[in-house]
Length: 448
Image 1 (cartoon, helix red, strand yellow):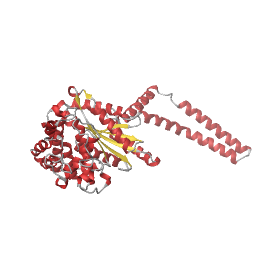
Image 2 (cartoon, one colour):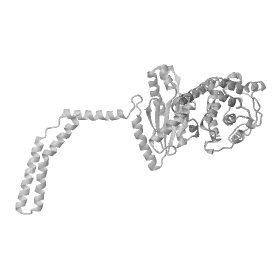
Image 3 (cartoon, one colour):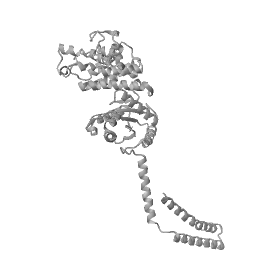
Image 4 (cartoon, helix red, strand yellow):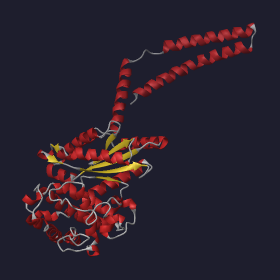
């Protein structure tokens, strides 16, 4: 550590030895200017000569450069540069660490504020990472994090900055991006992760949940953007994982859960139970996975728009996620038939709300969903099933799920979807208020 200071001390001594000569030279110049007589000029010349002699003596006294000292200084400079890089780099993934990300984010916020440019922050978290660590060991977990860094980095743009925030949580700083573009980019990252077969554990499929926050809509500083994106990411976790949530989405408020105490543990357990049942159904009927998630998200938005509180909207969403659970009792030949179903096959399919309601009623925490799921295929005009309920006799939650289910069904193709399904009797964007029988209180949350 003394090498650079020794060089500085050597320079200081050299300057100190040369200072008298400089002062003498300056004094001679002043005398020459102040006393334009022959005597004054003679004194000035004498002082200048003395100054030149002193300078010559100082230069003769300077030792030649020490090559060993120069090599030590160069090595120390390189070591300091490596230390600076290590202080800003995550050792496991070689990405910027939390400290470096914070500095980069503050600079990007300043730039966005100064020039009125777009900026978004993505918080990405690997789903079920603890189970991966516990089941396959920490080495497998570390390998998964390294692979995740590579996959996510490849899915992002060149101008985006990806770093590891801590644990299994990563942060992407996305400049020049508005809300819609940022969500699309986050979806691209999510799909890249979900579609990859990971070498960890002999080849497994892993997923991630992503929260998105946009400047200045969600926050006006770096810390606020990270917090909002983090909240949105945990909302995606509670909504079933493997999805993207925008911080400004009303569904984020609907899914906000307590963060401490037994209430949080109970909510986590409930969400896990819903996800387990949904995963079981998806194995039986792969198409039900994406459909159930879409119905879940849309049902929550409609519930919020109708004025239901966050807890009620969350439960309606869970009902939407599991509304097809009764398909477990429908034969594969019916589920996978590509032609129009005959009368007997429709009779089998119509058993699904009864079967689904029976299944969830056996789970104490989900019993309140049984009535909603059991009536989710009723119709406003009374021509639904299984009970033929009509109008407000249909539970509101079931009406909301029916709206979401019908809208998603009409925008996709399913083998048993009737060609003549109408928006006015069951669902659709325009039929939401009619079917639910309730006025829409806020257009801000209406995604139907």
